[in-house]
Length: 253
Length: 97
Image 1 (cartoon, one colour):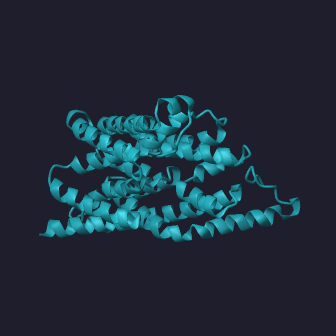
Image 2 (spheres, rainbow over the protein chains, first blue to last red; image 1 turned 135 degrees about the vertical axis):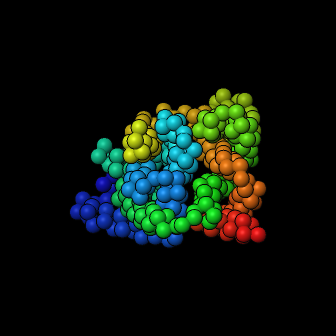
Image 3 (tube, each protein chain N blue to C red; image 1 turned 180 degrees about the horizontal axis):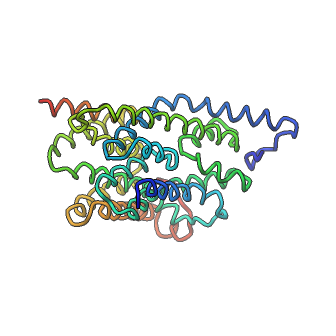
């Protein structure tokens, strides 16, 4: 077992029972989050069926993508007839935070070559947040937390796909609003700093303009990059040129 | 490209992001990139909200009000399901009037 870089390794004899304990403890710690993950997974299942995906395709997406915002983004763009390459690029950009998250985990935890692909499969910010808060950060704990969330998300998707099949007139119920409402639910907590609000406002205004001029997929990606550039510029502006040049961040985001 | 292949390609793309930080040497993701990448989800989510709300011209006003209601509930509860339920309830109420 590879523990946190700042913690002593567990004694040899207690490795397997300790790993199992860490796995189970983290998996159960995530159970309260199921109350959010299962309904959100259901919402995705319903939206995916509404966008024309089969139940198997919706489930495949939850199994291989495992990202609420990314999947809902994919379904929305799928419904708008976005070209494949643009759709994949947008979903990847939507999940850019996963790169930062994995960099953070990589800095805090020394994982073996065999452990890295497994952790990567199940890594989410919710699972990492709970494990990091409860400590110690370890491979079995990340695995337990990630697996717990994975099961809940996929269970929710299966239930949602089944419900989606039974809806007679989904548009009258406002099913097509599930996508934007999911984006809003993920977005709102991220708008806690001035720079994030600058990024969001810029992106929204550019999207308003570009959606009238360009295909929707291109407009979404273009507005997204304009907004992120504006947010990054704002941070540099707040920190001043010397801090930006020397890389000394005040971490005001 | 069939839908299943598109889903697998999307999954592969997201998986690369999850794996990259674990296999890249420390320090390769520089501070400036760190800063820009941090805003990509906020900006893209906003543009997706705008694009999906405006993609259908009929009932845009009701959809905007419903989304605003959902956003308020999201601010208050921080729960995705509560935001979705509230937004759809507002939509249902306004559409039935």
